[in-house]
Length: 229
Image 1 (tube, one colour):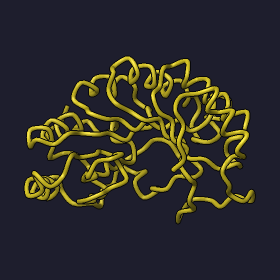
Image 2 (cartoon, one colour; image 1 turned 60 degrees about the vertical axis):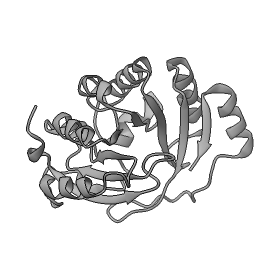
Image 3 (cartoon, one colour; image 1 turned 180 degrees about the horizontal axis):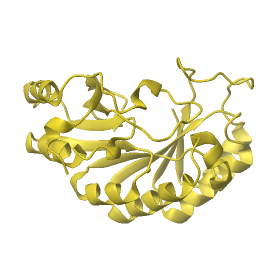
């Protein structure tokens, strides 16, 4: 645990309509992530060297926006990496905000401890177990995600599972295995997110497209509620 002032902020968005479904939220981007995903859209947040505003500045903006925002989302990077996150979440709640979290499930024990203070979680599921290490650039990266998924579902906290989709990253068979995993775990909602190229992330030779309609229908039979974003 650490005081919220120690939170390493990599960026701050005072208003977002997309980071928490059906909510107006401010987004605090926490600096640092141990993974090196091939398609990472926030590579500047991978190191622990923060370049965003201080927590005191973030807190001042949140205080002014009470009554205007529904909640605060802590994103990243991987926010559960930061020991100051629990106190930052508690501070946001003390201002009357609901609190959401974006996480890749890298630290399941830290997530589990935080869940009672959260109103919503967006958990990333990168791909199936067999392809996970190649995508994240780290060995043994799938196991903690599945532990985090089990803890999240068991908690009863509202959530969605998000997967950034590109046909060069996930085959139809991998998608099917992901759908089955989520169904067995009891996940409520699964979102396939459209891949977008970002500075610092590689381009893929395979053109981007959604899975074929027949594949999407197959995934809906195998898995939880599925939507495209």
